[in-house]
Amino acid sequence: MTNPIVLRKRKYGGAIRSVWPGDLVDSRGEDWLITFHDAALHHRQPPPAEPAAFAIHAVGLRHPLTVLHRFDPLGRFLGAQCDAALPATITGRTIDFVDLDLDVIVHPDGTHIVRDRDDFEARAIELGYPPHVRRAAWVGILHALRAVRRCQFPFDGSIEAVLGRVLAARGPL
Image 1 (cartoon, one colour):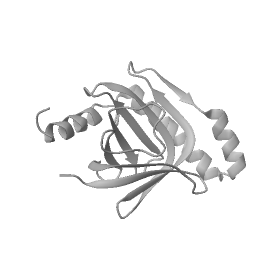
Image 2 (tube, one colour):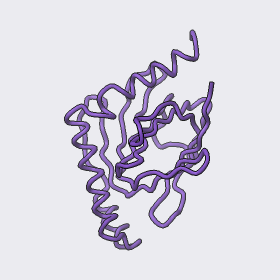
Image 3 (cartoon, one colour):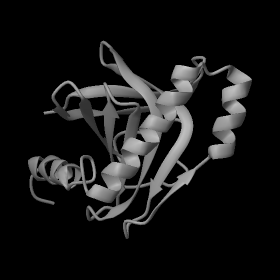
Image 4 (cartoon, helix red, strand yellow):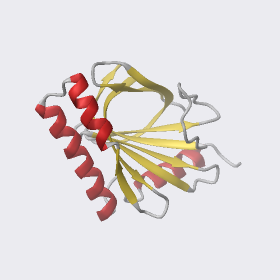
């Protein structure tokens, strides 16, 4: 059974960066929503720069972070992008989060980098990020780095388990 949602990534100020239909497949209490996206069924606009057969978002409802995990057709981890973001909001079946430009990119071997510091600083000036928004971006990045380095959610195997359950529920290949 599907549980359709639309996940919208916005920029500070409201502009929509991407729209991605999917299914709400799990949650972690009131802290996280977990959405599933199948490239064959759920078409992101604009299309992702790095396509994957399956993607799972861990969307922070209380944390300034949203994490996209990408997987190949066999369920192998291709990498993750941790977006510093304001906590998501929900309106009906639409989940919105505000991307704050800073990212932690996690490679399949577990190595990771912080990306887009210059973009963050430029956009913070251009759009007038208030101090609490700047602080939230860095808190999100620190949360992501800690989660990756300590194998904490969403890097503790939970997302792979969700993918396994979703794919198993579809029945035999």
